[in-house]
Each structure stands twice: as structure tokens, then as C-alpha cells.
Image (cartoon, rainbow, N blue to C red; front, side):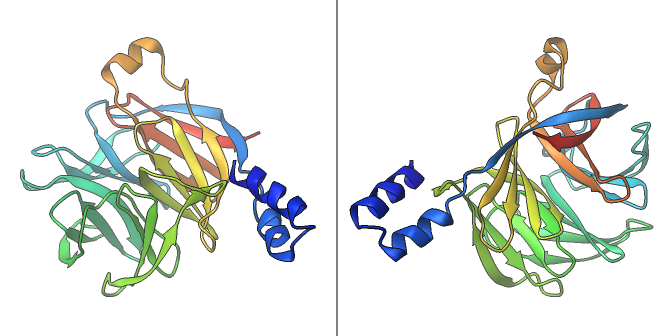
Length: 257
């Protein structure tokens, strides 16, 4: 709709250079779907909040009060190899890796827990304001979501705010940004309460692709499962691993037209 308005204004103003410039920046988002390459087991009791793959091991953050955890998981069998349970008053959220450290967000405690990746020993914590939802690390900074249309760029050493990314699709804000995965100059984000994933340009905040990930579970499986949530990139195979809260399966996929 915004692009159509800009096109009309450009015509009415005899191709006013400003409107022409805005119009050319208004390329619509690509529409993609998922190509399933393999299906693996996933703990149906895991309320998945964060997911990442590192050296052929999955690291998973799960949520809910009295059930939250940090897990090391075999990506092929779904077996939980190591688990740390969070205190009952903490609701685990997004998860990211920087070097040999894992950083796990919390929903409303306004703290991020820091672990050593091998032993899962606690190294400390960061503090932040507001809710914690999704988290990824782009090789330089942490990028964090809070359920709004704004992603916050955070300093890797202090977790302080460096900048913000306002995410839009065709000129309109994209709300409910949840679990994140940083891949190169782009950020992939689950849209909470939907079967959609968006691919976002990190420099502009524009949604470059809208990915329909519906239909992965059968009708019977959906009855006991919650929403799609969890994106992990496999750079070796250039594929993604995706799952959801209380999903019995983990899917290896490509995003295709």
C-alpha cells in the first residue's frame, strides 16, 4: 500500500526525485516456503525459546516458570546430552553464542545469564531493561528482540545498547519479532503466534523475505504442540534447523521460492 502511494505521488509530482528515490527503495519482500530435507526427533516437552548450532551440537534454551533450562542436544537424535535447570522463578528466553560463552535471556527478570560453553558453568550475568525474547550474535554485536518491531544492538562486553534496528515490511512495522538467528548481514526472526519467519536486512531493517513455514506438523501433532519457534543455521550445509515450542520434531530445511 505504501509503495502504491509513493508511485502515485511520483507521477503527480512529475517524477519528483525524492519520491522516485523512495519508490526505488520500496522493493516488495520475497515470498518463500520451506523445503524439508530431513526430519529429526525433538523433545516434545521442550518449550523452545532459543536455538543455535555450533560444531555439530545444538544448544537450546527452554522456557516456562519451573521448567526453564539450558541444554546441549544431539541434532540428529534429539538426545539431551547436558542440561542445566534454571531457578523456578526464571523464564528462559533467547540464546546466543560469542566465542566460548553462551548468553541466555530471561523473560521478565531483565538479566542475561552467561555460561561457559563446555561445562555450562555460570560465569556471570548482564542486566538490561524490558523484556527479553530472542537473541543472536552477528560476529561483532548481540542483536536482541523484545516482541516489538525493534531489534536492539548490544555491546558484546557490557550488553549496553549500541543502536537499534526498526523492522518494516513494505513500509509497515513488523511486530512480535521473537527468536533470532544472525546469518551474515541478515537476521532471521520468528514472528510470534504465527508460522512465519522473516529475513531482515541488518543495515536497513527491511524485510527481504517472508517465509511460510506452515504445515510441518500433522493435525494430530499440532493438538499438543505450541507455536513455531527456533531457528539454527548450519553453515557447513547452508541449511537451517527449525522447530517449535513443544514440538516432537526438528526439521532440516532450505528456504525456497
